[in-house]
Image (cartoon, rainbow, N blue to C red):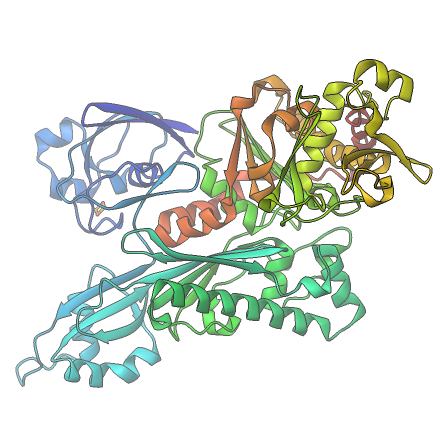
Length: 609
Ligand code: FES
């Protein structure tokens, strides 16, 4: 990596980027605005900066600057490849590009793939017989788009009906439409987090970077199974299931697209692009690609980077030429959603040693030491989603999500979603309950409930909560009535504790081995990012107490939120960020844990609290 130190209006900022990146891109990736109207294509000659350090002079520099300026280090930023550390002075902007804050504090300079240009063209005459297309392309020559037949069919009529005052619509170098009049203010795109459980769509105004409407729903593939493995198995058992799963994905996407357009008051025909971030299985199923090789060893993807496609091919009723762009995947179990999350959290841009964890049935883990990035997947099982837990449930109304034990007034304090009577325990409640039981001493370090007499001694106000359901030891979290039998109560059983131990051991073994891979120790981690909805609700203190994350001050543990959706937004708002996501394929090393000889020993070491 190389360090680029930017000075903008006396403020100084250093960013670390892979060698070879242009100074313009490095600035843009890091939200530092440099003048430009061509977006870094070397044609506008506006991206002037003064560079201290090796930077060869190009012929464009010679055209743009005087000899004295060249000697003083003035260059066009988009033509300087940073091959060593550089100091760069950025002059004040003459045209201020708009930027948006996305992801975890990331500033993105708006350079969407969707570009609209309003043009007033001269009408043809006998002296000027340029074709309709040439006339239009001449007026938008900085974009150099390629037209498709759909546009040519409309062009003669639209031009004449609109008195040659039209808006050209370009998506990622393709001229996709020509619209009568000035429609430059209406350019929209939809960012989708295609989750196994929940799918979230955000309608974005790409001219300003602002979200217009957000909608979410359960993935309609749910009836085929709650996790990726059961959905893959469904396709293996029934040859018709793949088409049905693909249909279910299409229906989910179409429903959400309709919903956000209605809610945002936006004509679906003005939505020109969709970015989809999903795990490898969800992506394969949405595209109708056989997922079987993802589900069986050696876990092979059909491709790490699925090709872009038309939104209509996914059943979306948007602009007829609207495109779908997909995130690349690093492995069968570190998919496009994680690549999007890495983009949103700037895992490849930050100098700190950071650990990214997306907790779920399949837990994805990424570690960066500011230079190298490694990733892996750990099979955590369904415990965090309430599966395989006696009173487990999803995070819905009635789920206990917060547990505090041993308070003076109330020995068992519960936080319940929807403030209703508790019905069960969701993932964050499970982690809290176990962490609290460990803290008060009712669970020993091996994860066993202590004997009754010990419980009475160390936690007298809680000891009567220890009971039996059948042969199994349980802790009663909530009694629906004072005389309710333990089997009718919300309880945490000994087996539930074991399930959580297995899940957290799988995860902590994963990050321990990744840290070792980079020659790091737990205490070297400067920030832990907990991604996904589960990460947002998890108590950092409880996660530390049970060893789900390294033992660090809780302030270093950050809930990063729906980073997959944020990454999808970034890809829509900036073609550079999109390229950055694709570059991660080369930058990140995927580490397979399942074939490591020491995995089982490490796993056993991590079981205790
Ligand atoms: Fe236009 Fe560099 S950004 S020439």
